[in-house]
Image (tube, rainbow over all chains, first blue to last red):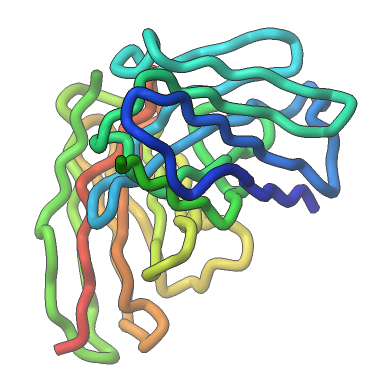
Length: 120
Length: 107
């Protein structure tokens, strides 16, 4: 059973770059069957899809964040990563990695989430 | 982007009640509608996908319906563990978008 675990800093300053990693266990980030997504949720608010990456190089970002987002896959570590540039307080959220077999558009496997606070 | 609107935003109900949550898409999404349950401090859990298919392990008291623009999630007999926030999500076209959530509280 594939499991996901996010890691990264809990506190980041405004204007800085957020770097998060999702470690995949019980499966391979190289699998053709999975699209690896990042989703975030500001405190008390709804979920927002950030984007997905497939090991083949296929990438799709939410247009609302596209100018500030970069995703990558590290097959040697069985991880995929998110970078979000030019942070503001509006980026404060719990960030989840998520996936579902054979589709990029729904999510049945989630990490526990990591709370990122943007504050000086 | 396709906008997803849920109603009500919150509701109070008792154990054993039948509860229905509605979700409307701003344009037709066929049956590409998924429902999630989220409890405080936890990741969302997929309950139903493509409008009516129960995810493995989800109790049969949960059911989904609808197609096109209007969808429902029904809990036939509310249990204590069902008090949570429920989200719909469209998977018809990118970016996938979520509703604002419906919080089910204990009356």
